[in-house]
Length: 417
Image (cartoon, rainbow, N blue to C red):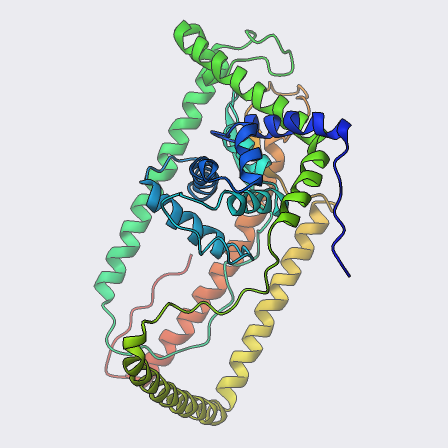
């Protein structure tokens, strides 16, 4: 059955340049609608602009908005690798030259594939969003009773440097305390700013100024820069809304672009090009790979047989490990059920929230209350305390077994909490 092509009528033809222009204003460094028109006919002069656009989009998504500078040939190679890793189905992109001399239609199809497969514009707009308030990221949606299930006991191969482990643990504790101290200092400074600027905000639900708003009073030039950033963001948001209204026209036009391309079969297995003079060497390499594969299969079967015999010989110890795992899973489910019942089935707090100082006894505006976050953190702390006591008990049992095995050695057990 032949592919049916949708035809863009005259009314939609007039809206097509406007839709492409709205898309270009939404994208970072978006090309003009003329570049899209030339790319439909696979004209070579449109390829460099589309290479730059794809590199800008993919690099911003990978580096969370950070800028990366590469030469054009390196940008083309990076774009090919990034699209291939994301599952781009057309093999024509991998065959394009990296100097940007041709392939504008294939690049246009790749851009359309990125737009169709996920919320690309929403992610880009979220990265360039201008924050005016003092935001706090809260994410407790993956809270569990313990970080992970207890692993089965495995004998370590070789000696373990206990002193290095102790040094790493001390270094980790020091950095953790330093991080906590810096966060407490930041919260203290935010509290002072919120207290000193109380009653200065025009919105009575907020009641005080944020750090950004306080900076505007101190430095008028920063206010002009913030105004330009807000105007730029508003222009992108208006372009995104216009694009959503005219999006169907663009996809109808892209259907005609896809129809002009020759059909492709499914993506074949990627094999590098081998020169004819290297055929004999290729046969030698294939023989060596086959021998290595057979050796690896024999080693894997030997390891599997040894593991099966070891597990079968453990007997009660293996059964105890399975029982401990089942008990840990049961504790996880019980903790999750109790947390759900305490929360009344409400969703866990997630995402950024603005910090707003409120007086005691005064109801704040809509949003996330600090008491809710504190309750969630205390619930998580209780679950972690239970897990810590359970792990400490297991460690004491292991030390007791070691003490029984070596009666001539005096073991001093660590004090419990």
